[in-house]
Length: 101
Image (cartoon, rainbow, N blue to C red):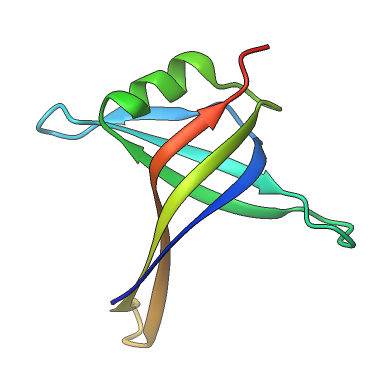
């Protein structure tokens, strides 16, 4: 497993999706657009946030809100339905920050 930590800034693209695991642990899924200089289209990232921070994201974040994400990227191999080896690129947020406007 390849693990990499870094920070990026982007804007929320759709309403945060808060769910709870069977053990009642909060998990929130975010869709974040990153606009890179010189690119016409934004790069989209699916971010997973756990615990109390997940609940706060659902409460305070909305479409268009600018955020920074400290992340840990995990690349995990898996086999798809046809038995083909693939890589899952997962972004787990260790910290989310936003400007309260």
